[in-house]
View (cartoon, one colour):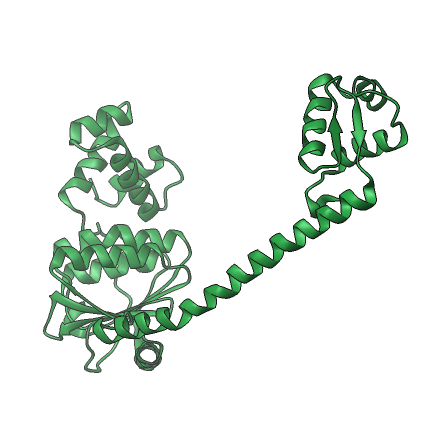
Amino acid sequence: MSLTSVGVSDEHLRLYRYFLRHPERGAESAGGALGWDRDTVDEGLDALQERSLIRLSERHTVLVSDPAVAVEWLVEQRLGELKSATGEVLATRAVIATLIDDHKQGVARSPSDDIERVDGPEAIRERLTDLAFFTFREHMSLLPSPWRPHNIDEARASDLRMLRRGIHWRTVATPKALADPATLAYLRELETLGGEVRRTEQAIRRLAIWDRGVAMVPVDPDDHYESTLVVRQPGVVANTVAWFEQVWDTGHELPAEDDLAVRAPVLSALEHRVLDALTHADKDEAAARELGVSLRTFRRYVADIMLRLGAANRFQAGLLAKERGWI
């Protein structure tokens, strides 16, 4: 049995039933009978009075209301509250037409969210970083021309992060792109870390796809550094995925190279300094101060370098770096 639906808790109902059974007893007797302290009894009495289940006389005598009358009144009161609340909820339907009209006007005035234009090298770099960060399964790209050295440095952190997280990373490059030593060395490096690279003789345009749901293509096919389109329209993205898969399936694995696997990858000036600091600095804090970077940035560079070397610890990283001519 419960009166919680009309606002009476089980504990307060227990107190009410005590007075129904013992109408001759005063309020002070309830504490001992129920095992409650004085504050709990007083709080219960206030709650029962508020619901008109009892009244207290000036001498603190408890006057119990007839349950048939009191509970029926609570039920009627609650039904009235529910009716009023239902009416208010139903009335909100009237605003639907207005909201739909606002939505239609907004859609008519605004460009589709499915296609977004990003202008400027800095904005493009930020969007590439964001898309890579929120990738959970797969990254695909077509590379018709070489990367610029600074673009390799900028892409490295995102690419390595994706590979560390087990993202299926694939790219197809043209002979023109692979003819650039820096680009080829970087692709070889990514292969050693789990990435997959193929070459194609087809005429391709620059393209990147994340999780088969977002694609990025340059506005001007001949200049992908200034403006790009981020496309989420399912039909368009599906077509770009199909194109990539066709190019991938007809592509060829990179030819084996005699000693490129152990050559030094293309390292930035800062990465060379990080490697050097790794071999002689006693503490990370001192190394970070020496390089003029934050402790967090220094440790991120160290983690990336260890991953690329396949080193289990920093001591091994130093040995492997020397063996491979990195330092």
